[in-house]
Image 1 (cartoon, rainbow, N blue to C red):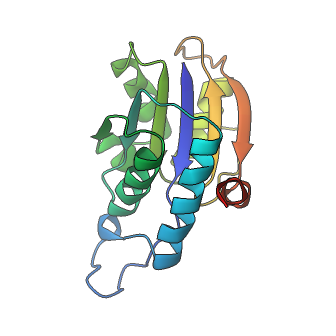
Image 2 (image 1 turned 180 degrees about the vertical axis):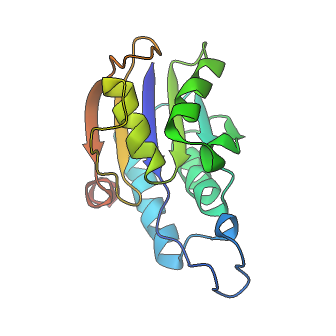
Amino acid sequence: MNIYLLRHGDSVDVGAPGITADIERTLTDGGKEQMARIATGMKRLGIEIDLMVSSTAVRALQTAETAAEAIGSPPLKESAIFYEGDSREIHASLGDYPEVESLMIVGHAPTLSELGSILISGNANIDIKLGKAGLILVDVSSLVENGGGQLKWALPAEVMEALGE
């Protein structure tokens, strides 16, 4: 299974007009533009997804929707565990998708970095830097507790943006 981990783009802070809680935070105008370029970069890389699962936070959903539109509109599922859960809970939830060969998870730091570490090594201790709008690909032959996934690549937003220009 190919598992793509995509961190949401740049977002407004709590306290911005109309934003009273973290889950309501939206992408900034710059974050929306950046995600459009990154999504074009995903298309140019030939990324194909069977299923996209997103955090229920608005900024993650906006990121997921932009990416999905660019790469052929795979089914998009919202799941609170990708917002509220920790990396171990999220890892355990991946068993809910046994038929999926290519999965994209859209979420947040530090959870996505920790999840990447768990997929590769079996623990959350590898310090994988996943900046805003960064994308990681891990090839996992089976979702086992002791890791075993292979990091295929980790691309920062700047590289993904360049691919999309």
